[in-house]
Length: 360
Image 1 (cartoon, rainbow, N blue to C red):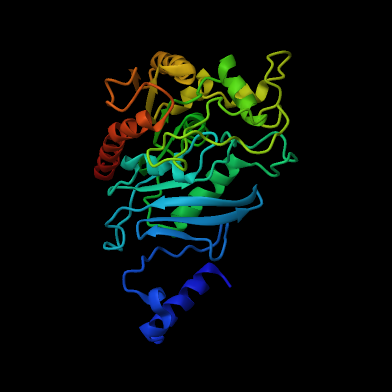
Image 2: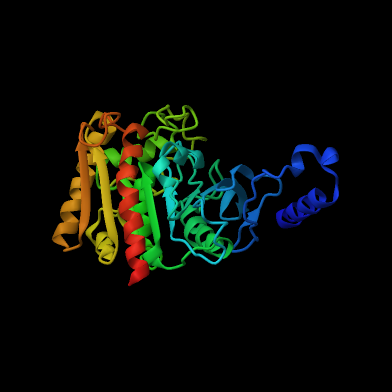
């Protein structure tokens, strides 16, 4: 049976069978979440929905584009059910390497009453691209196709979104920071807003290429995004990047000889040709400059900001250094102690931009 049919049967039983028989299943306070209809190559896995509350739930889908089942977590505004005629802006949050859809819990600002937030699985080392190699230990890995051609239209078809670029944002941190800029560049027709937090956004840097290689080889500690699954504050250590794959699996050879690294260059969010595609996109960058990782993300962010300036593309860079200017809990490093307050600064600005777009 389809997930929709199973849920419908559950509602019918709750109405017909006495409470004494169905017990807690029929409680009036059982959270109700929207039904999803399969489509765009996605099939919902029956009985796999995790309902955290009526405005916070996770569905699981399968697709031929990416091996295995994959979760999509959704935060709805508290007024979503009460106003069935209203449509909402939507923000896609891309988690970091070694992370999961549950990482967004560590950034409370993403639970907005003015927008929908969608957190799709990005893989432990998906890098938000269609891999060069599709026959590795992880199987099919067309992450970009999954997100841009399947998840986005699937969400627009099943939730009351405002389906235009002015009301759609893509944001991410660490690995997801590079993915956010890349997606905004690849599909400027989809996204009018993008933000990268501590992102590996300059693929010409040897340190960034080394980080990608480390994820392919499952060498933990290299740009590993602190996962909220290990502690409520989201400052725990991620557990790794999954199965070992060939070092050329994602982008091919990283070595700049005779064009061998052409896939790296084509993806590079810092490449002027790619940055030029953001001329009508609101771009925001956040980074600290402490620790082994953010010392490099600060360099990458400064490079991207300088190139955007030369291209005449407005952008906002917040380099909070050692973190004291951002929050008492931020040490300037690669963790949610900094990312949570960065989102607290960013989300109200994004909400205002969404509201301004609605009046234009």
